[in-house]
Amino acid sequence: MRPTLAPFPMTRLRRTRRTPALRALTCETTLSVGDLIWPIFVRDGTGVEEPIPSMPGVMRRSVDLAVKAAEEAAELGIPAICLFPYTDPSLKTDLCEEAWNPENLSNRTIRAIKAAVPEIAVMTDVALDPYNSNGHDGIVRDGIIVNDETVEALVRMALAQAEAGADILGPSDMMDGRIGAMRQALEGAGYSDVAIMSYAAKYASAFYGPFRDAVGASGALKGDKKTYQMDPANSDEALRLIERDLSEGADMVMVKPGMPYLDICRRVKDAFGAPTYAYQVSGEYAMLVAAAQNGWLDRQKVMMESLLSFKRAGCDGILTYFAPEAARVLRAG
Ligand code: PBG
Image (cartoon, rainbow, N blue to C red; front, side, top):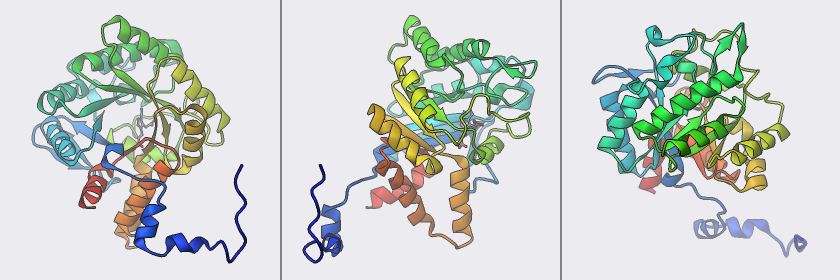
């Protein structure tokens, strides 16, 4: 039980806030470079860095420059990068076959990065939306996102990514049963060391807008993703999803988006004690950067405060487009 506080003036809570030294001693949460995962957008070509208008400062990089980014991340001490391909519209089909092409952009990038910077952990996105003519994360038949057929496609995609050398697979599709199916397939194919970070509690959020621009899915998407992504009103359901994915063999779990869902992060960490991550998504990045560009917020301060808040909410790490910038701030002390 919590001891009762002595009444004022015996208790003066400002005593421990008086100096930097006392504040350092009573600080409860720390953010370090080791907590960061850097999402990177990849495109075709060589020597190309293409800005994404709705995410100022974020680029689509050709494979050679994605390798450079991975080198930069490693030098900064960032432990992992996460790849998102911008797929040429001509490669998008209704059955999403490009998703498990061993030579697709994502798999070529994994190989190139693992060859140049083997020490960095490469995380992937396992979902069909970059390859789908209708922009959905699953295969669509008669207007329905079909679960089990999608899971079979996701398993093929996951195996191709493991074969290319991915360290962490990130299923972001929200189909039922995909973690168990992937885990079994990975074991069967000799990839027992490949980790799965499940996007277990992923909400149908309006904060993904800029990302869909970045991967070229905005124009393609027909309808919304509410039959598979979660209702922002729900919280108990997040716990059931996390429990289900952990029981199917997920090693790490993610809550997404981040800042509007810190209550979910806290509940998940308290309930399961599993390695828990949050994705500070494209819209959160865009919102902070836009305010900073207007001179309304201090960019560096809100960036660091927002990242620290994930740690305070119980997360072990954060996927964030701010990763290299935050890493530089942390290294400068
Ligand atoms: C899709 C996917 C999305 C994001 C990561 N993977 C978008 C979506 O579900 O529509 C969003 C990331 C962001 O907004 O930064 N599989």
